[in-house]
Image (cartoon, rainbow, N blue to C red; front, side, top):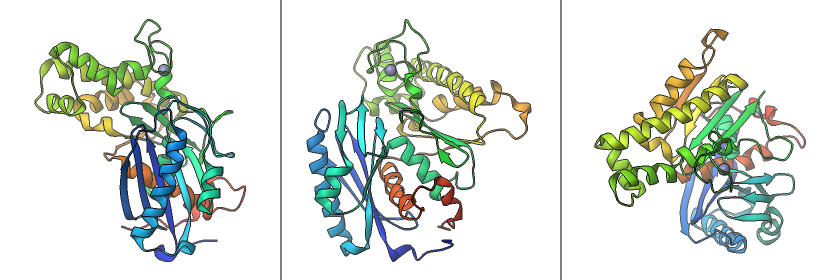
Length: 330
Ligand SMILES: [Zn+2]
């Protein structure tokens, strides 16, 4: 049984792929970052560019950290989409517009080290279980809000992936069949109603101009009334969906994270209220709600923890093996 480990005994690389670039971190065994770096490169529709970029970035990060290769246990890659974790392929990604892309195999061959690929929201769930707020939780969900709306589901300390690895497509639950067109090609998905693009469009209509992400945050901070109305209404809509999900799954903890948390109280308070008011409060302990604010770096750390999980699990063991890990005290 692994009870404690020298955190500097080995290192892991984590990669977060976005449509416009790659965030890379190297972490020690306690999931503390030792190197972080950014590469801006268009990856939408271009998986070959992504594989090339990952190779370059992994090598660069190892050089920057001045690590001997033998100390690097492997690479974890997180990306938005439906991932076959056994084969290390991306079956489909709306965000990247990829289908049936082999990632792990070419990367293993070129880098000469183990590579794991996972849906990015699931990487966050693994990170939360490994060394985060959900370390002691058996059943929890992690909701990411931003351009996309995603959900990572941990049941009995294991990731729930579904039959095809397609769980957690929470943002593509249809909440209004007559609603706006979603990037998935259907109408009225939650994401098309309350995702960041939808919010910017609706606030833009009211302001009579194009609204950038920074404009949106600024309008919220200055408490612009028409903007607050849009944001609060979106928060309520999302809150109702979240409350229904909580009623269904009965998790002990809900972690809300992602860049959408920058919208603050006007967006988040209605979600918390909906969970408090629209779920069964008399089942015993109320679901604990945690809001975490962070950026791409944390997603990459989540990907790095994939390697930690795989390196310290017996082959075939489920995520329960994480329970024997001592939580880092920092
Ligand atoms: Zn959709």
